[in-house]
Image (cartoon, rainbow, N blue to C red):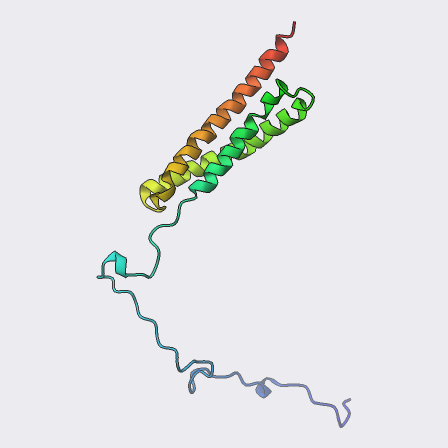
Amino acid sequence: MTSSNSNRPLRMDDLKKPDLAEGGNPFRDELAEEGKEADVNAPADYRGAYETEANSRGIVLLLSSLVAFFASAMPMTRFFWPIASGLLGLFGWVVSLIIAPVALAYAVADLKAIRMGQLSGDGAWQTHCAFWISLLTILNAAATVVAIIYESFMVV
């Protein structure tokens, strides 16, 4: 039972969906012009719709590979700072084995992209250096482990 001053329930006929096809779009900006398509026959320099190549990440790769290289040299602190060498050596070895493979993988991918023309060749020398430093870092970390294991078994 409904009271006399309560509203009746809505019916489907009470709600009318707006027809967007009738009349103009009320949200349309009359001042905006339609965009022009790029001329496909124009030279590549004048198209301007997109960049054909991205910038190189060479400096970031070089810095990260240098950090990994210096971290991989931390186990050498056992010769001139034996008190902290256990912690610093393990820390440096772990940090170098986290950063160096990632830097190596990105350097390989960037060198491939530079050869294919997807990246600009501006930072190619930095990417080459990062590749070789990362590879040297991984070899240095592996040689450090071999040297420590060899030294620990050769205790007299």
